[in-house]
Length: 331
Image (tube, rainbow, N blue to C red; front, side, top):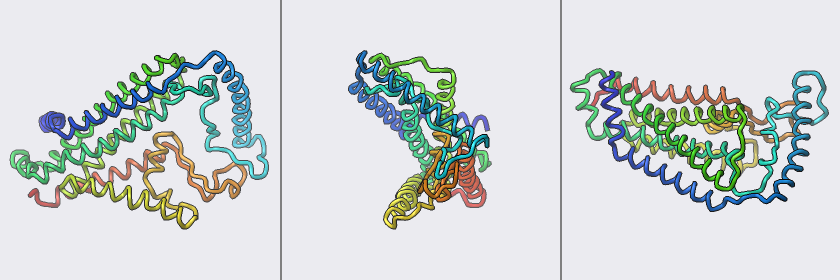
């Protein structure tokens, strides 16, 4: 197993698809960094003072909302009619002077959206790399030749899957490190790098871990679908069909008929959003909500629920690919 993994690891980084993917995501990083560099500007003393005053007022209201929500949800106070509160009293980050400054770029304020963008890029890249890594083996006959000297089908497929996931995981870690350093450098260029608290730094690291794990999940999913179909195009076709027909199709359908989007609970994207952002709430009609709750017609999920759904979907498809590997011939 160790030899198989080492061989597959070496082959992963020698493939053109992997190298092209690395070049593409590096190019995207360079373009985004350059774009933010063009839009950056240093706030004037007057703008800083105005933001400080507004932040103090907004922070006071934020504190009042959080305190009120905590007392209601803990049962110390009763909510008023039609009064509703977010899940876990999550009103977002507490307003600060920097968060209210109107300038082109602030790493302290915008790093979550940057990490979410990186998650999309790395997950899609992982899906393509994982699908092509095993799909080409099946379509070219390389898998059959490999099984001649290593007839243990499960071990062969597992070694390929582990190599693909480990490779994309390593790429994601390096990419996020460079991504973070690049945008911090952009922020430093206009004097907007502020001191992050231990809690904020911990949140950044945990978000990075979730991004890497999501990229690995995308790799495993693409790998498993391509193995089931024995061709790279199978995984790409299934992925495109799911996005266009199910994810986007249901959005268009429910917007046309102008009714509640009940498909939210049965689509993967809300759970991915919950995994990345720590919670996800889809509210359709706040007036229909009883005191202190998420509307019945809506849908709310935590990052734990999102992670469990993603794991379940990926595990199901991966197990199906291993079952197919054992049941079918290797030609």
